[in-house]
Length: 327
Image (cartoon, rainbow, N blue to C red):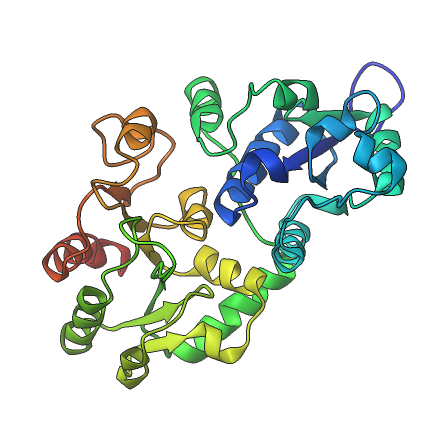
């Protein structure tokens, strides 16, 4: 019980601004980690996610588009993606609710929510002034430097239980390794996976290692992986995306490209090997990591490798960690 008078509920209002965050899964997971930190700082009871097209609508009066009801509240955002992100938010442990602000009535309801016993993060005023970056772990690193630890992201208990049962059934005693192979055909040179290298790596592992790879995410999957007996393609079991994230959380090891789903592993407890193409986001990665291959808050066997995902590099990194995590 809190000291100093009658007990009062404190909530963290997580502001996910579609305009400034880019609406990606990666920035959402970074924000969810920041909200877990805010929950610890303020000894808060729960997190309420607020998904808003523009944080300016939470500051002062509504934008003219919302006020007269003539504007598109989502301003071109993809409704399907919005639903996915709301689903992910609600599936996260510690998140009590997710408020999707489409239209003036929803904005008013969220403003009322934020008036009493509520700590907003990030502050909408700072968001509007461009003082918060969704695509950075600096706030997490700063908290770790003072506290010596960070809260670890986790899905709801029922989803974790499901993921453990799924992995147990599919792996049959082999070490489960979750793998996300970023494969966006609309972009090039942005840390897409080298599919040939990953296929050769997994094929070779059939001979030497008692592991079961679980391909997660909604990226297009090369048909060749279906022929590998040590590969389970989660997408083909029609899993919702929150279940993909639960698989990343509970797997004995995560491997893959630096991407949105990889951030679930980044803030998790289990070992990971995340590859980042060395010529992509060079300046940003230098700010985040310096010369290191691990974040300051990383646990043992959690590494970010700024190296090409060649078969040789995959085998080397995997071989260095597998004998330790498999024991």
